[in-house]
Image 1 (cartoon, rainbow, N blue to C red):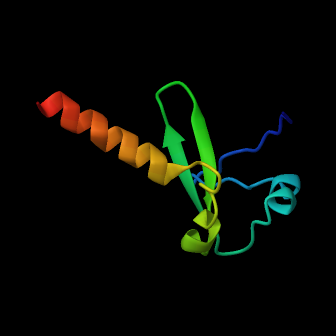
Image 2 (cartoon, rainbow, N blue to C red):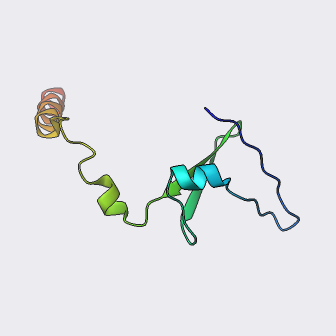
Length: 79
């Protein structure tokens, strides 16, 4: 993990370091999500094509079989 530091301006703005912009292909107009859990702040880039970014993410997870097992267990609990 690399440690980088920026400064917040009077208007609440900061700069994303160039190394991070290059490594994560961030460009003018890209959006960032800020997650605050009360102890730590995480900044996550939002892909321009959110559907395309998710394509294939669950490949190999055998989701259909898992869903069938879950529903069978639910039915058994209802009886």
